[in-house]
Image 1 (cartoon, helix red, strand yellow):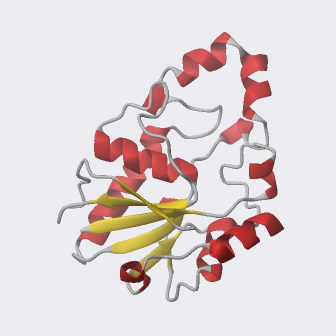
Image 2 (image 1 turned 45 degrees about the vertical axis):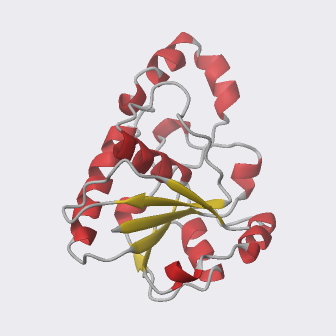
Amino acid sequence: MKLLLIRHGPTEWNAIKRIQGRTDNPLSDTGIDLVMRYRIPNQWKSVGWYSSPLIRAKQTADILGLTNVVIEPALTEMHWGDWEGQILKPLRRKLGDMMRDNEANGLDFRPPNGESPRDVQERLAAWLHSIAENQTNCGAVVHKGIVRCVYALAHSWDMRGESPIQFDWNSAHEFEFDKNGALTPYYKSIPLL
């Protein structure tokens, strides 16, 4: 079975590289204009669709014309805790070695009072197991962190260092999972523009 993930359109915070996490920001005007130009491949238009409960994902699903979208809490972006609202580069400079050591933890990287990518993967694995019961392809409108965590699950990437691939955030991300919800090491990028 296949799973197609589409990242939400840009927000004002994305434009200034501010960590959003679970902060519930809407799409910016630029984000709305961009998503209005997206074209979902025909074979994906009639599958069942899911969305993160955050407004930026729900707006993206609405603009894409997706109907009967199921809101799924497991698809919520990683919780960045005390670092939500910060800009990553200045935060790295301010925290120095402490941040480098934390980021070197890969899947176990954890912002203060936030969650780790491993935590995100645990909720995603449970969701994948539940949707596998339908034995059908499906799609979801999600977040950058969710796409990266799904990719890491599929390819046994420990999330240390740079990503093994360059994600195009104006593309959909196609994955494959089996009847038990386990991801296979398959990935395909499908341009939306």
